[in-house]
Image (cartoon, rainbow, N blue to C red; front, side):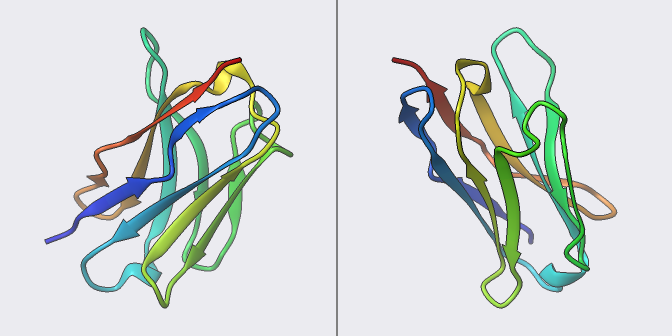
Length: 114
């Protein structure tokens, strides 16, 4: 059974940083593309960043140059380093495993406010 558990969210001032973590259970973690999505109140869920099994990364235009996705296959972990945070980054952030079924974590709240 696959479980994804996010952590690291919280309240941060504009310009601050947070590092989100996603712990994945299940086998063969290293072969899957992993993604971070976010959903702000009243808005659709959107893709923030992804990292393939080979380590290639892609980012939404809104976070390029500020966010960095990474993974540690030995620990079954994926991370999202978020710098220069803006109020518009406020959302629930979700970890997603791109497999045949598609698995989501429960989400972690990020609030950027002074």
